[in-house]
Image (cartoon, rainbow, N blue to C red; front, top):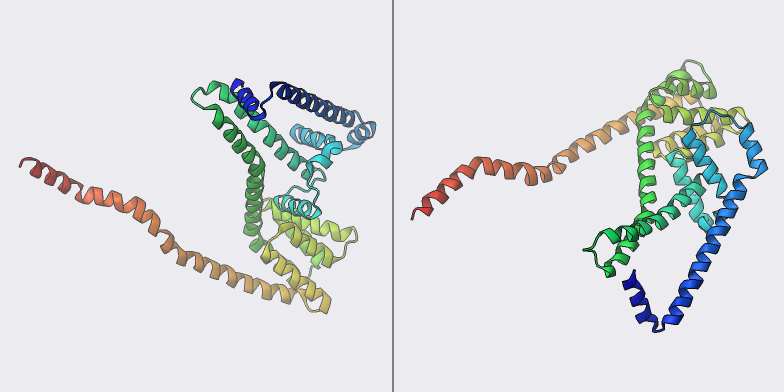
Length: 320
């Protein structure tokens, strides 16, 4: 710490000015901390929020209740945490939807975690530098900035992985859902009843897709147009296969053609598409195996095959 003070004195050239700067920065930090704590404490003691929490169902897990309370208590300071660009907020909100987080406070909680990591990780690095004597003081700030960068980019990476994992789960369940939907529609059920039946059947094997289908049926029941409910389903999942199915169903309902015939045609095309994709992956397998063979298998093979001969040649030439 003394090294930092000496560097600041050398940079500013005036020790009195440095002391005044430190005092003002400390006062500003304490002021912001007190105001933020007061806002959070006021939100926790808000009678309206307490009444709503009392009337809400009590079936949530303690961890979920803690996250909800934390996110809702950040309402007064959300303007300082959330991005001001509406397009950026909508983009992040859509990614949260694709990851399965539909809570109204999901965006606030996400940026709260990012801000907390950006502040906590550099402080942890500065504290840990006291127990690392080999680390030079000039490199501590670089490590602190690196930790802050990890805190800023880490949640983005985690969110991307969650989105990809959920998309894979939806993609794995979509072929089964499509076949069941074809069977239900051809047996005489309406589109809404068929969707609900498929959701009930997939509740155990593919719960993510079952939840999305049940939500589509719920929107139709509350009065949302079927076309809009299906488009919302495609937007929530973010899958091109589901988007193609939704486009086909919307055109079918718009022009009055048979839904069963359209689903049968799309099912056949989707089955051919899956077969072509499997053949493409199988064709790429040979190229992908080149690198493991060259860097892992071939060196071991050459060591086992000619290693003894090389050792004998070394011994033979060592006698001369």
